Length: 213
Image 1: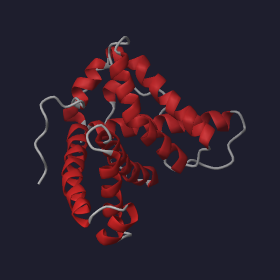
Image 2: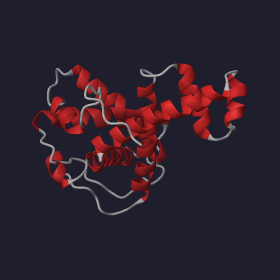
Image 3: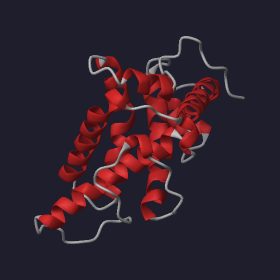
Image 4: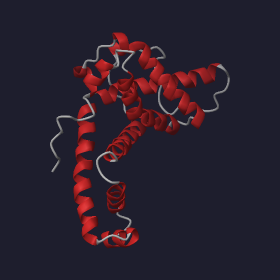
């Protein structure tokens, strides 16, 4: 059972965060937005075939692109989820990179997904109904990013030992008794960590998913 959302949650809804991003001076809002999504954008760019340096360039390009348009941006959730909106923006930046490579004669392979316009008007973005390879990559990386972000947020709520116990128990590679032996703790401590941290982990994942989808 997922625990109810805490009233003083550190993670605001995507709508409220997007509203904050319209203010260039809201450094905390931009930092939260960057910390939450840069790894996702980077991972998708890497899976699309970009090098480490090029994927980092795509991350930078994506956030610069968003920063330039946010002051006048009005997000309409009825026209698509935040998840779909960010997917389209990310894909457009990846393809902008591919087109620059092709223009400069540096392109040695075709991009993973289909073409997308270089200059997108965020006010007109619609979820792309066509399922392609990049959409599949996006979905996998999106789910992984939810898990990673949930673990990051748990570090402020539980001890490092409890978090490690939960990770090892969740991975399923070791029995709970083996986990206890490996970390030199009692078996009841492993059960307790699995239950307590597991409840918090599910709540964090559910909160992240609800806010974005």
